[in-house]
Length: 306
Length: 257
View: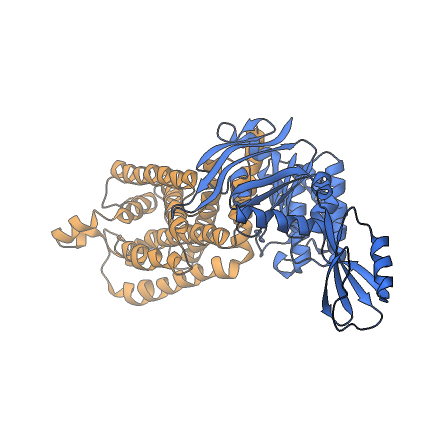
């Protein structure tokens, strides 16, 4: 069964701006799905429509087979949302924020208490349960939104940039928790600007730009399509100009840093052989960008050019 | 979701709303008590003692129902307008909009908070009044039903104000420029029969007049308005404002893109 099915989804605002232009998308039950796109691509509008926060202009939304137009309560029952911006009452204690959410979904108080305790403990917020939400750090507020979204045990969890502004250590612990949630059977849709995050967590991906889906495939298939990567080489001795390599395009970013474009079929050993022939010794090497990031930029740029 | 689930959802909203104003009781419960005490001292004791009885009652006894009703009206309104606008401003209204709760329950949840505050403050003000006058009760049913219905009505008014409000200034415009003048001109401090005929007719267009008089009838047994007419006006306004509020919520006016 599809966890989510969008058919012919459109959204035009009163000022005529069309944010979503006929989106067709399916997400399988149990998937960890990435919804990527540049700022203003339409991701948050799509999420807003699915969660009833934005009125659609046309099309249909089905969540686990329930149609949003005909069975809105059923659809809402299935969903959990972690929005991009903090949207809880800053003047309520942390525990109350989570308990209230459980109440809105009809979870009985005793059960809500158990669930709130479990999720707050797992997200490292139990000690802060009596603290006013406004007194939490940015990272804690993000975790509170995750705890809140999970307290009613949703079948489909939508995360709209859940780790924005969160430090790396905390981000990785959140990834760990989300993987566990997904393993337990919750379908997850994730939007993020950290493409490494999508690569680490998600199995399938849709890339949206200007209200259209420009790519919809598995992360693996997407990365396999990448036929080149740019390596940054730290040189032992400074160079005045880039070497004239026969098989590789290269540029000098500064005297001791060389950027080389390597195609998949070329391999790195041949590159080092050629560098040796030019008397260049390398002291360190790294990828210029995340592989998915390069693909993402290529796709979005080609979308713009079209 | 079953009825049981809806009951939990409604109770959650109601308790949340009550906790909100009880948490800040120094701002919500205490000020009306002090203000009312001042009304009794100044208008009742100092000025009122110089005035002739109104419809057979000492002036201070006569104004007690109106003062209680004024407090109930302003507090019911203020609670919902500030709470609902606050939930829009901080965006936590989204918690409710995405949850499987019918719009009518969301509305009733907020209204119940307004009614609870109106009634709690009403009781506190009544206790304050007991220090100044011998309280009377002519008809318990009319007293209770009118105060609850009026509180419900003005909580709805606060909700509609909050839906349209775009800034904190917008939530104080209606109370200042509409509600307060109508309340003061609604027969709290006088009987409309004391006015010239023209102003008596004009006063009949003021809905608060019906509520104050109905409540006064419940407490003292005197009124400028007949009870069936007063109930018809109050219930009529409730039906209109409730339907309009529900329509606003369903359409997502001021809430959904």
